[in-house]
Length: 333
Image (cartoon, rainbow, N blue to C red):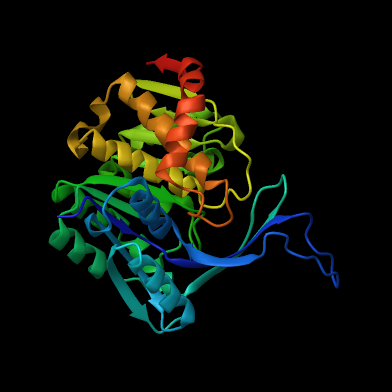
């Protein structure tokens, strides 16, 4: 039995961080922090972060598709080095790649090639849910052509196997946001950022968007809002916390690290899927605080996971956590 089965798209990230500017046509710009290649994709980043936070790798399964190329080999070798249990589908397509350019003081620029993830097989995921019986089932979707077509069936199966279900999304490719709505009645925990939430729900206000997600069936919602902090909500309460202050080198992977923090605390609290909307106010505050600290730590080094350490997370909470908790805005519905 796994603590977590983490499924979705696997990506080779080619990261150029801390740039002074983007090159003009024909111009040469040097990369002061170098050019790195790292494993990316929500399921991989999240799994690595959880190992770095202290969960044994053998309790975490990672499932996705890669191509028969050097990038696929790199992803598989890197994930294996963390002791993770791997369920990798090799396909006759190129491995997903993402060229990420990060200019100082600006948001990231993503340049994505979609390949293997588009043919990742739903039957593999359904079989793994049955065989591994995970405590938490996590699926990152939006760019998984075959999986996204079967997403309602997949989350329903995970609920039938008594898993706590967790969904994360990226901007969908080849479809609109409505693809995930039928599955949301089987989703316990849902994460997205503020703009994704409004696009998904077609709501004008944040409050209306949050209420609409609960109408779809979600029990616990987390919204990341960059420098403005993050929001955590159930049907009966919502809280808004300010962000941790760190020297940001590369925010790539911060959202995945945030989700790792949520899962870490849910496992620590032994929250089951059928009880997830019954968490109390203090638990919600602590979950959000820890998730924010893990997300902030990810921003302190180039790449998606290099900045995350248990020691750094604990230090952030020790030095800034109390002030953030005191300033937490609480709304009981």
